[in-house]
Image (tube, rainbow, N blue to C red):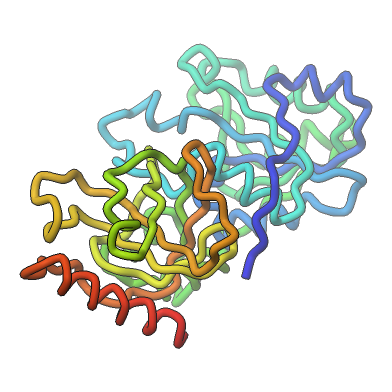
Length: 303
């Protein structure tokens, strides 16, 4: 079970790092989902007093080619920061990605990196940057050698002969292949959101739930799941609650197996999906629904 860990320190400009006096390794990339390929890039930057990540917001493809951008991502920025913190990252530099930034001269961007106290830079071997993607890892290594900065180009991590990617993980989720997602992430797939006010029907049938608002992230297909919420086991329903409200929008509702959790509005919850228990079903009555939820809870607790 991965513990829930607070946010990392955040910088928004490289100059803030220059003024910090830190001695660090810095991993470069998007890190959507922070899968095993991304984790290899993190590992390549380790070995110094601090470990940092430089990432971009919004996703560059959303700016440069919005028609090719994925409809859903695996981890929004707040979620990404928490995952990175759990992996030992000390700080994150969030660069505002704009067309103007994309047009920056590659050597100029590299010089801004070198002007900090960075000791090692790491990224995927095919990572590119700067105007017309003129910068690459070979050039970065060449420029870095002149100023004493080590550059590590990390080979793609493969599973079953294919490169691990965020695209593959999204497809696993669409296919209800949670095990495949786990194999590429190195942990159960999770989403992150804020507890918001719902219709509060769960508490009237003995199963109080938290309605979790997930904004940009990909939620698995409809159904009932064994989950962990901030490290605490529970069950979750994804769907439209057809038994009680046929007009409802798709939602994620979580019931945790603890009476000591303050399910207050505004509370942030990371929900990890461990196993799908069943499909979402429309029952003939609320009593039938209540009886099935009791069985779902027993099934979940048996795992």
